[in-house]
Length: 233
Image 1 (cartoon, rainbow, N blue to C red):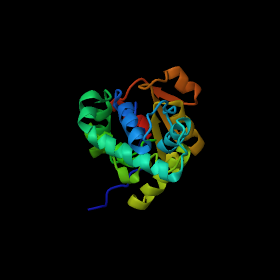
Image 2 (cartoon, rainbow, N blue to C red; image 1 turned 45 degrees about the vertical axis):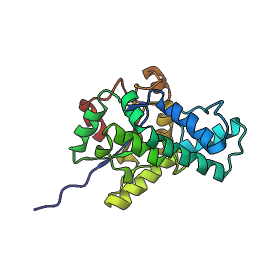
Image 3 (cartoon, one colour; image 1 turned 120 degrees about the horizontal axis):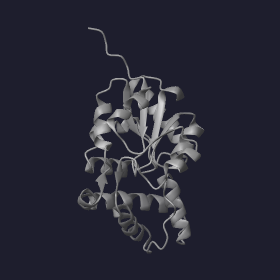
Image 4 (cartoon, helix red, strand yellow; image 1 turned 180 degrees about the vertical axis):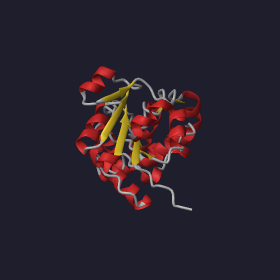
C-alpha cells in the first residue's frame, strides 16, 4: 500500500472573531487578571484587534502606570491563563463558535490536501482553552501553530508556524503553500508582510470594504464549508 500524499497547504486560522466570540468574557477575564497581577484596576485596555498578546499586555501595563518589565508581563500572563481556566464555564455559556466555523473546520479536517493550525495573538494556553470550550480544538494541530506569546510581531508568527509544521510533519510549507484566514486588517497585513496568501472573513468589526482596502484579495462574509477549495487551491 502506498503512503498517503502529504498535505500541500498549511491553513492558519485566527481565533477571535474568525472562529469564536467571547462576548465580553474576555474583557472580564482581563479586568480580573490585571488586578491579580498588579494590584491595580485596569482603567484602560490597549487596543486588541489583530494584535499579539505580548503587545497588548505591554501597552496595557504602561498606560495603567505599571512598568512593563518581563516579570510584570509574566505575572499578567499567568493571571490571564488562570482567569480563562476559572471562567471556562461562563465562556461556554456566554460566548459562541461563530456560524459555520465548526462545519468548515470539520470539513477541512477530512481533506488530505490541508493541514490546519492556528495563528493567533492569543497566548498559547488561552487559545487552547477557547478552542476546547467550543469543541474546535479537535480539528486543529496546536503544535503546528503560532501564538501571541511566541513573538510580538504577527508576521513573524507565520514563519514560526511554518517552521513548526516542517519539524512536526517533515513537509516544507513555503509561502505559496500557506494561507492565513483572519477578520482584521492586521491579519491581512501580517499575511502580506510574511508573503503568504490571505483570506479575510468579515465576521469581526471590519467590513468587507475595509478588509479589501487592507489588501485582501479574497473576502468572504462568513465561514462555510464550500470555501474549502479557496483554502487549498
